Image 1 (tube, rainbow, N blue to C red):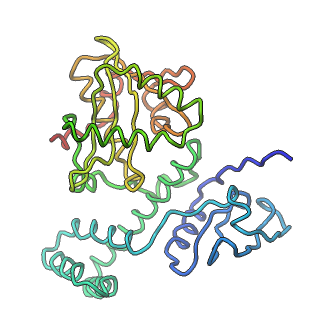
Image 2: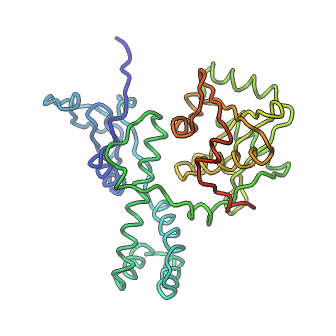
Image 3: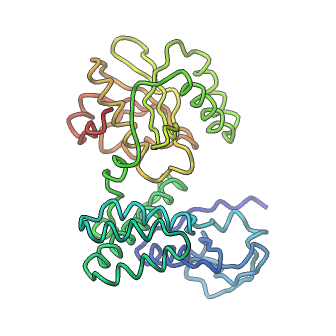
Length: 326
């Protein structure tokens, strides 16, 4: 019997809401059933769930997550750590100095932070509504970016007017982007490259390893968190005076889904354009597929798994993120 190939169902508004609802349920563990297109919840992976045989089917079957791991996809994590993170981001955006101070105070009081946070919001209905809208857009963006990471060709249905990506000012306040690195950063990047490539299949690893062996003068665009830790990078090298090639790239798993790669890529486009290069060559494998979404909007010419970017076209048709220059 052939192994069944599963694909993510279309991310409709109803499914998106169902995923978010399950993420916020701290009692059970949520999974997306890629056959029925529905969210299921269990207390552990050995617990059986009753699901449809396929979308629209009336036939029900009983399965365990443990024995059907390919069919059931674990939803994005949403616990106390994520709860603290979103509240911390929100406080930075609060304009009212009185409530900004109050929220900052309860955020650092130790136990009962979430309850105290909610009590302060109840004092001001306007700020409470801002919080609810902020949280809704934040979680929608997490789910959408998670979907994009899980399946590069997913089609998002009827979400354009409802969902906003995370605003860039979040990144400006929490991350630093630079084209200058220290020798210690190079060591960290080499370790990250090994981590990023260890799960690749044999062919992908061969392609990347051979290109890495040819490196003569690699350069980098790097993203740091406020602790000055490298959390993402793009490695590139000049092939000649007109062409550069991206040889490796990646973002640390903890920081994926925040748009960091997009900003790294934009930074590279601006830098190479200033140095009078004309084309950027990059590869895209099953694992490294971060550039796929740019192909249509920026008129990429594609050959096999390689893409050629016209720098003039890019800089004319994309807003700059140069305000993050350091």
